[in-house]
Figure 1 (tube, one colour):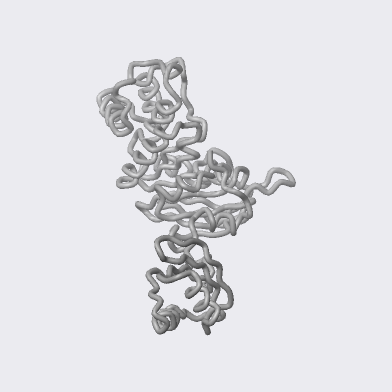
Figure 2 (cartoon, one colour):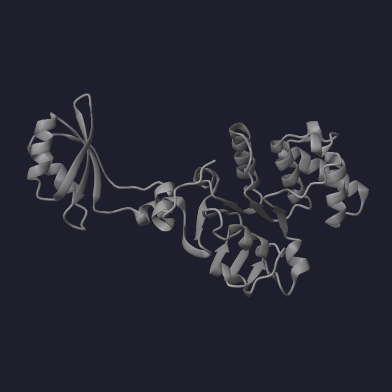
Length: 315
C-alpha cells in the first residue's frame, strides 16, 4: 500500500532524511519510532506530498506522489502533529468545509460522511460547539475526523497523542486500533509504549536513517544477548551459589533476588549454544529445581536504547 524508496531530504548542509526505504502492507499499523529530530515528521510530510524530497520516491497504492500527486493524495487521510483546525468554526461546520475541500460536493453525501466520521471518533456530543472551546483531546479527535473524511484507505498520523492526558491517550490508542481494522495506518511517535501498544510493525529512525525494522517481538529477539540466561532456582542461596560456581556452562552470574526460597539469577553462558537443557539437568543432579529458565528478551525501550543511544523521551 505504501512504498518509500531511497528517500533523501536535505536542507542546505543539514541532511534530515538519509536514503530511507521501506514498504507498508495493506492493513498494517506501522509505527515510525525515533527521538525528537530524527526525521519522522519530515518523512511523513514527504509521504503526504506536503513537501518534496531531494531525491527518492513515494508510492501510495499504485500512484507516485511526484508524478501522480492528486491521485495519490486522494488515498491519504493526514493528521499533522498540529491539527489543521479553524477554531472560529463549530465542529460540524469545519467538517463540512473539509468535506468540500476533499471533493464531497453533494450535501446529502457530505452529511452522511460527516455523520460517519463523527460517530467513528465519538464527537457527536460536541458537533455544535466552537472548536476553540474544545479540550486538547477533542481537538485531536476533530483532526482525526477530518483525516477520515472520504474514507481514505491510508491514514498517516503524526504524533497523534501529543499533549493529551493519560486518559485521553488511552482513548486515542483504542480508537487507532479500531481504525486499523479498516485502514492501513502509519503513525509517528517518540513514545515507546505507544508504538508497542498499537503497532504490529516498527520502523526505527535515528538521525535521518532507518536503523531497524521488524515486529516488536522480533526486534526484541534479534537484539537480545543469546548468551544471557534468566533463571530462578529453588533452594538455599548458598547451595544455588555453589552450583552456579561449579557449572560447566556459565562464565559469570549475578543473584538478582530471593523470594520464598527461590533464588533469581542472571547468568552469562560461556558458549553461543543453547545450553538450557544441560543446565537444567546439571542443577537437577544437585536436587536444585529450576522453576524458570529463559534466554534474555529485550523490551522495545531497550532495543531503542541500543540502536539510538538515547533515553526514552516519555511524556
